Amino acid sequence: MTDPRIHNFARILVEYSAAVKPGDKVAVTATTLAEPLLREIFALTLQRGAYPHLLIELPDQEELMFRHASDELLEFAPIFSRMAFDEFDVLIKLRSADNTRAQTGVDPARQAVRQKSVARLIASQMRRGATDELRWMSTLFPTPAYAMEADMGTAEYEDFFYRALHADQVDPI
Image 1 (cartoon, rainbow, N blue to C red):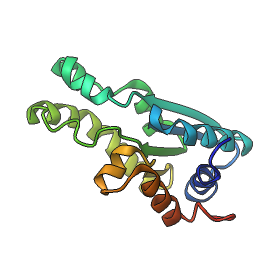
Image 2 (cartoon, one colour):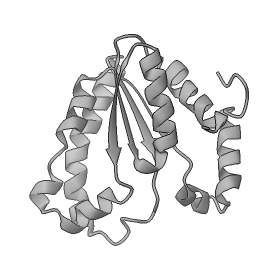
Image 3 (cartoon, rainbow, N blue to C red):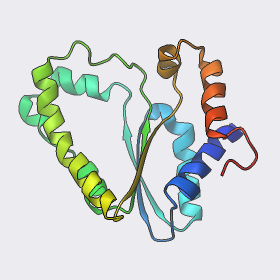
Image 4 (cartoon, helix red, strand yellow):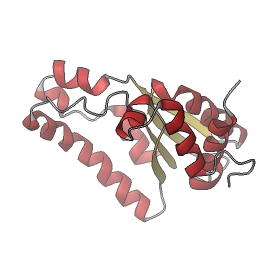
């Protein structure tokens, strides 16, 4: 059974923040750590008559990218991400890191190369968001890594997180 706070969090994102409507193309980005929330968002989006598309990443995907990719590959913005940023109606980004310090040892020059490819996506997001073509939001999903950053235990951090969202209430919206 899903934690009711996760269901309520999904409701906040789908019904309130993104105001998902029938026919909307909805992209949701997250790592596999956010699976419980992804499931709820997927179901709620379908229930609203919209088209959910999940863009799932591995928790250590960026680490793998920096370790193994050439500069040419670092410059490449993934096709499905480009489509989401350029063509979709809604973009929900769920930050769900398992290691908040994963890139501390990465050469800054390589990070800059990667940042250039991402900059095009962000520019599209901002341009389309400013004209209301794209409804987007970025939020966290509580992971042990974020709990460590807050000097809290995982359960304590989850309680704090969901309480702050009012997701622990019957009607969080």
